[in-house]
Amino acid sequence: MGRGDQKSTKGKIARGSYGKSRLRKASKPVVVAETPVKEKAEPKPKTTKAKAEKASETEEK
Image (cartoon, rainbow, N blue to C red):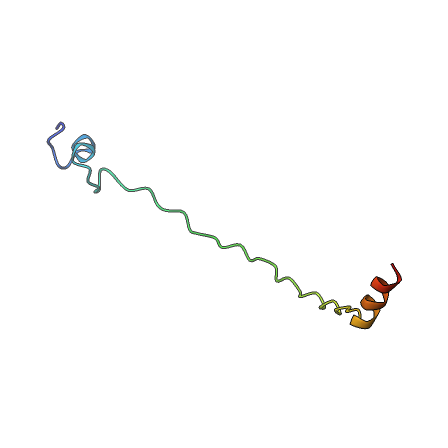
């Protein structure tokens, strides 16, 4: 009952195998957190200046 024994814990560790004497750890269940759905903000109205206003501003300066 030593390192070469396939049925002992020490032998399982040496071989890197699993079995009745060396059980695998149970994996934890993966929990997916629900992310809150963000409400879309209302789009901001685009404010555009008329080209005529820009032209008049440059003429005054």
